[in-house]
Image (cartoon, rainbow, N blue to C red; front, side, top):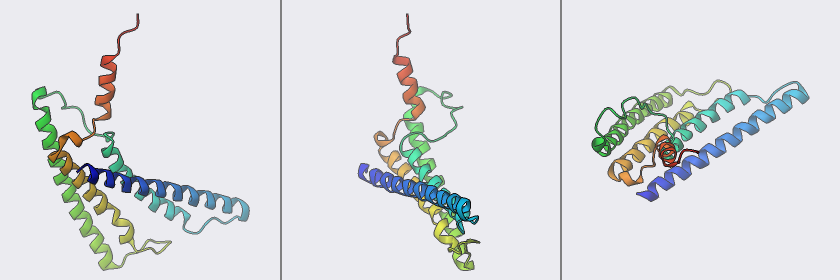
Length: 174
């Protein structure tokens, strides 16, 4: 199962890196052309937005994989500490179910775009090609949380938990 998580993380990392690099190149070329010729790169803004969607959705998975995702913490200490392992497993199962539902809804969204033959306004790229990032990202998140449910030792520590542990081990300055 660790191999599955590693493969998913590497795929997300490659997508995020490529999307960011391409976004920077497109923005640079647009500005350079605008400054030198007075006319920017056709479709640059739309391309940058589409690349940002890829970047954000792959970054969503990378944040979860590294334990740095945003989550509400208001109820963390409401229940006994002894219950925490079970509650965390339940949370991963619930998260997997939510991501499965979102993935199915996203697939309906993509299917409708295919049916309607929708395309982006400027570049005329079929919309479903970009929209596929949503069911894929939600599917990867579902798979990741199912692995965390089945094998909790593979789940990364929450970044705040790590920082709190480091702070509690430090001795006060005299």
